Image (cartoon, helix red, strand yellow):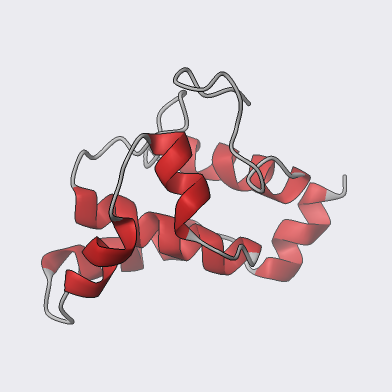
Length: 110
């Protein structure tokens, strides 16, 4: 899938497993067709990046998302999110639609 700002998906986000995940997140409205978060809230985007990076085992986690989404300072934003922040509840909803790593790998290999 292509990103308008760079015309490519940032590596290491261009894998079969990531493609499956992009489709799921777009179907539920968390990502737009440009693969950018549909909610402009930086905290939500940062938690989404963290969840995706964890699921896809991406390290370092912030750089590909900052490049792909045109954001900066995601690590600092992540550090500033408190346990009681309302975006923590939002990311629980997102994670509920994300597949397990085993399921993602299975669909990514099809």
